[in-house]
Image (cartoon, rainbow, N blue to C red; front, side, top):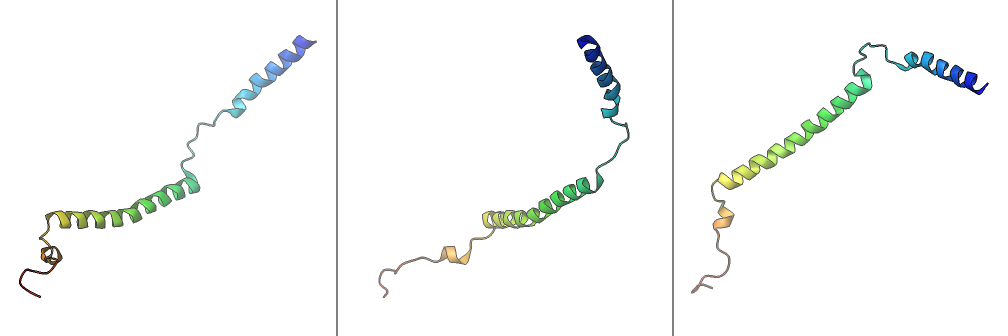
Length: 81
């Protein structure tokens, strides 16, 4: 009896296994997948603008002319009040 029940369970599992397999059709990303990739792209684009502004400001500061405020000496000069 136990062997017959075990054989029946195994036969049912073997017969049901193809039902869990995929159909082989490509479904694509779908609406949520496309929305997720689009949202990630929007985040990257919006982070790109401040990054470029900081980068060009840094390059301008490194290779640009010396600013006027840096050339001003601080403190009283000798002989003048």
